[in-house]
Amino acid sequence: MSLTPNDQKFWMRVKELAKNNLGQAPYDFFIEPAKLLEITDNNAKIYLESNMHQDFWRKQEDLIKTAGFEIFSTEINFSLYSADEINIADYENQSKAADTTEIDTIAPVVASELKNGLNHKYNFENFVQGEGNRMTLGAAIAVANDPGGMYNPLFIYGGPGLGKTHLMNAIGNEILINNPASRIKYVSSENFVNDYVQSSRKNQMQEFTDQYRTLDLLLLDDIQFFAKKEGTINEFFQTFNTLHDKGAQIVISSDRPPNELNEFEERLKSRFGWGLTTDITAPNYEDRMAILLNKVDEMAIKVPSETLSYIAGRIDSNVRDLEGALKNLKFYANTYHIDVIDIDTASKALNTLESTKIVPDKDISSKQIQEEVASFYKISIADMVSKKRPKEIAYPRQVAMYLIREITGKSLPAIGKEFGGRDHTTVIYAHKQISDKMKTDTGLQKEMDTIKSNLR
Ligand SMILES: Nc1ncnc2c1ncn2[C@@H]1O[C@H](COP(=O)(O)OP(=O)(O)OP(=O)(O)O)[C@@H](O)[C@H]1O
Image (cartoon, rainbow, N blue to C red; front, side, top):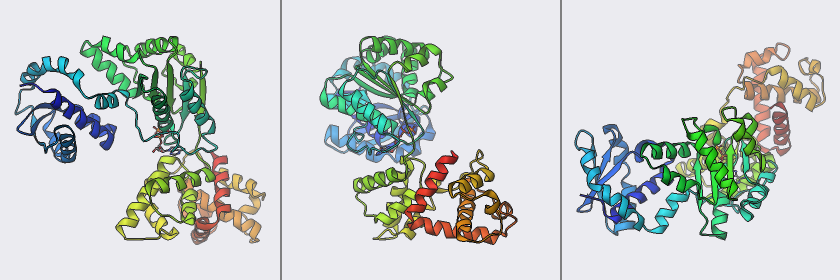
């Protein structure tokens, strides 16, 4: 029994839907190793690497049904088999010939989506410009308009969730609009390594080089995860040289600049710097507001601006966390049938989020925070820890107490001690005063932002 072209199309579609809907890790673990054995009487027989994958697969009815309707215009059911029940070698021998001859007939739309790896939802229009990403956005647009030009390679670095993947995909999607015949590949460095390892195991290195060295645009994401397996660095080096020599564009992203990629040889690090290296930093308060306004539109939820301002004041890590906060808010409001998402609702909803929990920052001490706050409000440390009560001193003292609690996670009595041996109830009071004020006072939210960024 072998797979017909439509069976193969169906299976590629199942995998594509899984990749888009489930995310990379579940895809790599559960979906990629599975095999379609055959489809008979509208029933897809699926072989699983392990019996333990059965539970996961049973929940994937939607994937099978969707792909089934798209390819066969009918309902496809499925049954699961593992090594105890079936000898996979029998099936593989039978389907070998079909694998090599029939795969080319797969509909171009499915094949090309699988090949370029681009995520179509990321484009320049839905990327919000701000202080921290202006230069990188400009460079990305320049590259999309003139691939292989001045900025080759373009090396983008920055912390998690700040839009590197978004911009890389936006470059690819834009180039594809301008030139649909472009050969483009977006790939994480982990998948580049996997591709290489699989190809060399299966003696398919020619296919690998044919695929990568003939590209017009290579988008290689998260290069810090590039595993140094035998041969991979060398292969990447050759790929880089071939593409660069023929004027193909290369875009690389990383969580750090090239000179800090200690695992890489000098010859590669220096090549990364041939074009333009540019970073993305965390959004400031105004940019976080702009991003939130944009995202509520996209997500079609109604959130009053004072609530958005509260969220922007509370979440200052990255855009992924801001998106997470809005999703959480939407879910919370739906669950409790809340129409107007006021600050109190937002506060309750966000309390369940990891990104708003206190993660102690071991690198910042209470003393540093006291000094930074004292210098920001132009008072002395002696005054800050004194018993003096005028507003110009009491207010910065409360801000410092609040920040120490939020940043270091220290206990309330320990914080009290650091302010001239005050009682823990004073710290509770200070924390409440400041967190209440933070909900509505945009001036204070900005002050906090500046103090925190001076500390980091
Ligand atoms: N300036 C922005 N405007 C709109 N959306 C953004 C912006 N920056 C990031 N995002 C969104 O935030 C989410 C995370 O961004 P992305 O995955 O591109 O981050 P990243 O820098 O690649 O993170 P990582 O290093 O963890 O892979 C995405 O949904 C992306 O669309």
